[in-house]
Image (tube, rainbow, N blue to C red; front, side, top):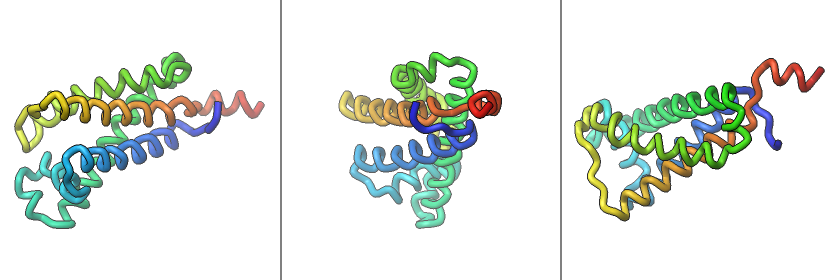
Length: 158
């Protein structure tokens, strides 16, 4: 196995990389700037006012995106420490996790946010957004597959 990370490192790397790429994917899917995408993320807390907040709300959205991404990554990485199959079959695990992320974000998180709506998808936007979440899940799983617990690390050096 390449890349050995502590659980903390796997969460940080997986969350920040996947979260940042997710902003780029959303930008490409929507044909909007990353600044607009970050403001859209911030609108989950601030409502429509976030689009008038300029770089301040874009930065707030970026921070919020990273916090959510770190939380999502932590769930997978910690689960993979308990379920070794998630490390052995990290691609399948990441794809399955991506499907779960898609549905939780779109049908739980967004409707409960200040936006208060369930996203409406065309077939094309559904596929594009699902692919983005599959990629997110695989990135997190890739970092998670290399995460070692403190006990595993001590055994490897002994």
